Image (cartoon, rainbow, N blue to C red; front, side, top):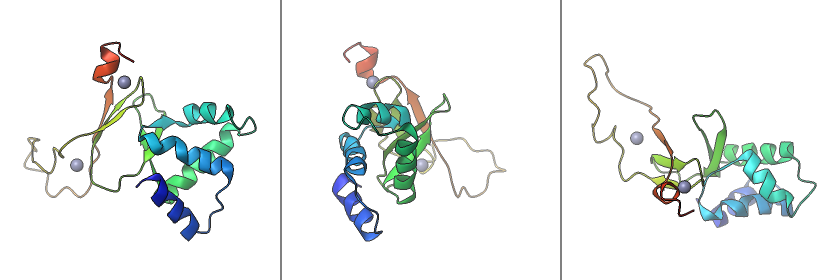
Amino acid sequence: MNVREAYKILRDKGIKITPQRQALLELFADEKSYTAREIAEKLRRHYPGFSFDTVYRNLKLYCRCGILTETMAPDGIARFSLNTGQHRHYFTCLACGEKVALESCPIEENKFNLPGKVGTITYHRIELFGKCAACEEGKK
Ligand SMILES: [Zn+2]
Ligand SMILES: [Zn+2]
């Protein structure tokens, strides 16, 4: 998913692309993850009338369209990012929002020592959170 594909989905679904919705979508072009609050703060610089509720509703709309995905960070705050559509696991930096894809899936590679009672796994989630290397070194 990239921003251009997202526009196509919105058009196909007959969802009106308002300047606000466009601005919201363009924020994700950097492929980072953001909380609704971060998004609202960024957007309000250009659209002072953009309320937090409107931002949140539109983020949820984009999730339903498959444009964005929502992951719950350990602090219980949802972070939104473009839906890549692939089976991928990510590390998210809670300081700068940088999102890094892991190169492989530890479940698919059978890297876990699963007890014998575990049969077939049909669904799993692995999300890593912390501080990216650049933030750790104080480069950001
Ligand atoms: Zn960082
Ligand atoms: Zn996996």
